[in-house]
Image (cartoon, rainbow, N blue to C red; front, side):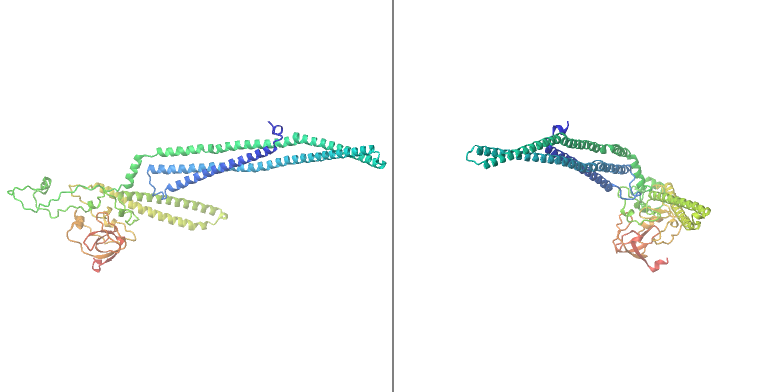
Length: 568
């Protein structure tokens, strides 16, 4: 149905309708803009959320539990999902909003052009109508004047008193007015015919053509809205496959959670490698009592002890070696904070338990090996480039590569030295663990311990000559070796009733909580007595003025030795 034939007299209404259509298109464009802003804000909030919960630590410090790894995978998938939301916003902005705004401007220009043509045609028709109306009014006026002149002529012609000149004058006036009326009639007829022709052209040609253009413009606007509706939906549909993959990745991450593997990782992470403490032996303090068979008393000595003693006199040293067992009773309590946070970090990780030390050393060896391989590859590449330069001098000077090759070789030697040093420490740890496994403590041998000493945190070395010193540690004197060590020699250091002599004093540089068994609590700037030097493990035995004794970190105190003890 054509607007030109059906709505020929509705120019003003069509003007309002086309303006409403453009306003509606711009309103939809505004909706799309706000919709894509919602997508952009949603994607931004998702990315901020992912950034907030992503691990901020290095990869070495990140937990390796499957539940944590799955959560990080979900965060990565969510980050990809946010990227898809941003893609939806970009599609809407490019293919919908920008297209609608450009098309709206084109529609406004086209509508303005068609309406201007319609107004020009209407103005021309109004002009023709005014000309026709003016000629009509002139014709009417001339006819009235002709009638008046005719009436005057007939009156004078019938009046006997009128002179001949008056009659002639009235007659000429009548003829002139009649002639003018005839001319006005002809002019009015011509203007009327012209107006009718222009009016026919206006309502049958000009206006239908203009209204037809307006109709096509409005229909194209409607079609464009339908296309943008489809593009709006297609922007969502295009990301559905990727979004589905993101969701599938989240589901796969959820399925990857393995509680057994996490339990194994807990064991690997916190296993110390120490053996559980053995049974405490029975201490018989009644052996020095004189008993007779007639006093009717019963000996409290267990049957096994009596048989093993074989009736011999009381032993001179009944004290069992309990010092080490006390220092490793962390079974149901928290691991002391100083063992992780406050203990000085050593290059050989000797401050860690054996199992954790072994893992750290293995990890460092692997890192050094990878770095060594990179240096080897770099050296090979430089040598190949040098050969190319020697064969083709125009490509470069081969001597310019020699400093870089020398530097790479030097780095390789340093890395090999580091690897060898760490492998030595690793073999030492593995040898200790195997030897410790052969020396499982039991009540039968009264927990005989190997020669050496143990720090309060439980790490020890078999011989003082095997202890590794770092540059910031004070090396202690070498302890004398005994070919036949007494199994209670180490415990006598702790259980001897006679206090050790003071060999110096120290001032605390930092406070130390001393939560572990065998350590000593000290406050900053507190003065302590030194009763045993650092044996190379980073711990010094000290005594408070109140008489309390224990170990303190050597790096936490400023030590001043007595002159008489320095030479001993």
